[in-house]
Amino acid sequence: MKKQMFFNLGASFLLLFVASAVFGAQGLPWEAPMTVLRTSLTGPIAFGIALIAIMVTGGMLIFGGEINEFAKRGAYVVLVLGLLVTAQNALAVLFPGVAGAGALI
Figure 1: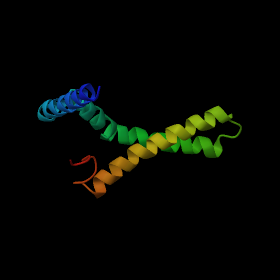
Figure 2: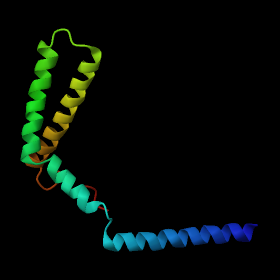
Figure 3: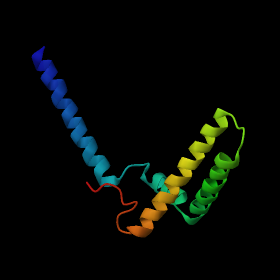
């Protein structure tokens, strides 16, 4: 029983090692689409849409009057998404070598 367990454990580590070596050398298949998505979400058009979203949702929350709780929560979500896109672009301007670089391993 112990011999079978050690064999399975060794085979698992060998498979993990081989898989990491294969994927580390080629790059992962979803890296290119994720790079395109990141570029689309942080470009100048996204920045303009984020600024408009911040202004519209801020005005809606300030001057909205009687809006229900669902609409308020939706406005908060749009406001936070706009702030996230704007903050990423602001960090890219302030720290050009750091923003959007990701983790270095």
